[in-house]
Length: 347
Ligand code: AHG
Ligand code: MN
Ligand code: MN
Figure 1 (tube, rainbow, N blue to C red):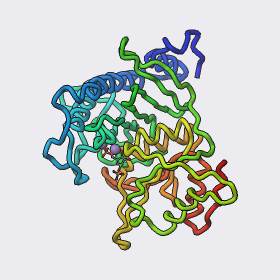
Figure 2 (cartoon, rainbow, N blue to C red; figure 1 turned 120 degrees about the vertical axis):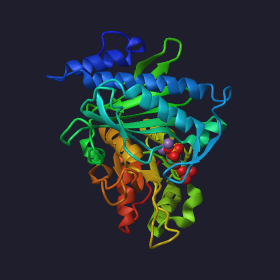
Figure 3 (cartoon, rainbow, N blue to C red; figure 1 turned 90 degrees about the horizontal axis):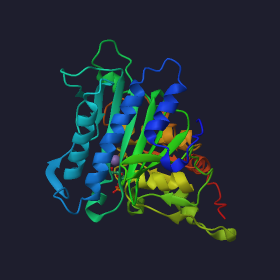
Figure 4 (cartoon, rainbow, N blue to C red; figure 1 turned 60 degrees about the vertical axis):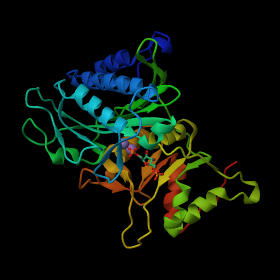
């Protein structure tokens, strides 16, 4: 990425996108505008999240989504905000959201473009009522089908086909982190001027961490090898320091911490019924975008058996086991699934 002659604190995401655009010969500007429109949606959601205790947006709508989960008012607010900010720019031909069972066509009255947007409008929404960080996640693909409208198959592309991916964490500050395949860049929202400013250029995840993030309450429903692997992280024999458990319960927030400090996040399948293992996290809206980011930052994302980004999706709301984070930690987990426990050499 080109170094800004200006100090980082005034280097806006708009400027960054323009400079990136210049480095792509033949760029039409559609991607830049699409990303810009997305930042508007995230600013609106950020503002709403920040006043969540003051206005009537906490709690459930009373509905259940396609995943059988109770829908929060803010899930719907975030979904509607992203859809409405993105439907009329002329850059997209189709959207799909975790909160909607089917693909979301662009209304007929608007122009259509070549890109597809997949999104998890509000991630970790069970945390919103208790003032704990939540996020949004997005993935951008290019249309492959003929015709202007885009089809379901355009959404079902493997993660390796992503043009860009990112997330926003609405935490003690709001941060947007994204990649378009040229490294990972993080921007912090300065609410006083309403701008995302470059705060974390070219992010890299440490090769190995000393933190693991998993819902340990599910221990008895993990496969035996996952149980052994987690136990190995707690092993403090031979003077090794045990890994620390850090689990917020918002994937974006857990992922963000591990991206900055190193570590591994695991959501393995639930083996309560051994004949029907049930993963929880979603390939298109959660796993693929974060996998693209982590790989661009030098880390890895796997089901334990295969690279997340190489999975050929078969349905819009497909769920998969997700193991993501520092490369050496993810590799150690993959090895442990083959019955080999790598000793914990954490210092
Ligand atoms: P979402 O709020 O988009 O449905 O995602 C919730 C996800 C993810 O954010 C988090 O890592 C995980 O669910 C937490 O699940 P558990 O409560 O089962 O640990
Ligand atoms: Mn989610
Ligand atoms: Mn969600």
